[in-house]
Image (cartoon, rainbow, N blue to C red):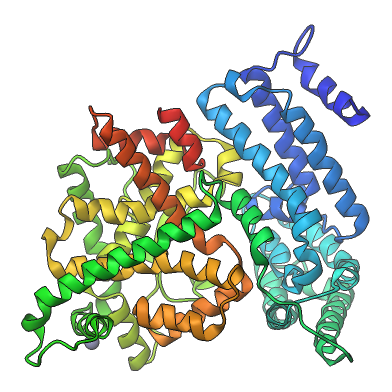
Length: 572
Ligand code: ZN
Ligand code: ZN
């Protein structure tokens, strides 16, 4: 037993008289202490979560800092292993699993995955300043002193970045340059003006002139450094594809599925074939309703043509938000009439225009308050199409046509993300909020789309079924794409063929997806893998008899954002 472990054992035991009891009470104490220590070790993440105690810190990612991080993980893993998860109550048992996974992941990322060596976009200080500035629960003078200290630490931060980068991918160099150029503009422009506006009379901008100039110079130097890399003799960019070994491990840690990456990939291939068969049937059924000419021999081409035709039915650009708002009570009514899930009438969903500061891409999203701001409201943000040209708006409205818009609302709002969030908040757990499982969150939303249609939402109209299949293909093909690119080495042409010809996506959407797959790994799998696990769990439980859908949903959601495989254990 090492010194630090002994020390943490003593800490654990402060509350008890004799020898430590590794029960739920001790575990609660352990969790609170862990989270405070975690914030101290990760002050930028703390700021993002709304915990502002360490806002003055901006650690440079040096080898010393990495070593502290390694030691931190090992110490807390040792302490964690003193608890037997089987002796803890359900909610704590799941927290134990999430913490174990989070600490193991952190070690994997620093020692094996090593994106800090090849992804220069990991270094950017914009949000660490913006989030202090926008904090609600600290005073202006605290804010100013935190910002000064973070500004002063920026040169050392970028110096460490330049020392770390050894073998970057071309794609991440490009992204890092774009984003850090944005940061330069932000620091000299918006940030300064915002400081003076939010902290009137404090001369924040002029008082910090020197630090701002130093920060500006440090970021510019970093951009120059990145631009120079491809100019070096014998330069050969690292492939952005991470390959099978790293992919399988990252999948295990990020998704926490009961199956491996290759198993989920194979299930996605099977699901794609089933969806194509279903779409072919629906197309033959609907063809003469929409076209006089005979159906083309090429089935995929016929499906594509019909989808284009059905997309003519869509909301008007001036009443897009109202169309969404009008659907929420209808969805709520359907869920309760069909007895699918209890929805708390005291927590109705509020639809609002996406606030300007987060209005980057058009769309709809749920915005939930952070874990330290739990009194704040949850909103359904909808972007207006005001800034779009006529052509852009038309393309957007066709994409989110009459049918797809309803499925989007199911996914984002009811009974999708919003309902899941309300259930998760019933037994609040900081661990689940901070280290929750993304595949459960996305999986539930994707599952709820299919579940609503199975229960007759949309009156089993074949048009609705067809558009659902197209929408669902997106999740399925996200998995196929991610695995095929990173493990099987697909190029952009193969990717575009999958997305455009087999998943019926518009060119712009498909290009965006290619960019995303070249910059991220595994995350694209979370939708389909979470969905598959929830669906399979339901079908297994159904076979045991005595099955009630509403009870199943409520039980499943009561465990919060935990990995589905762990929830399945609990529901046995
Ligand atoms: Zn139109
Ligand atoms: Zn989602």
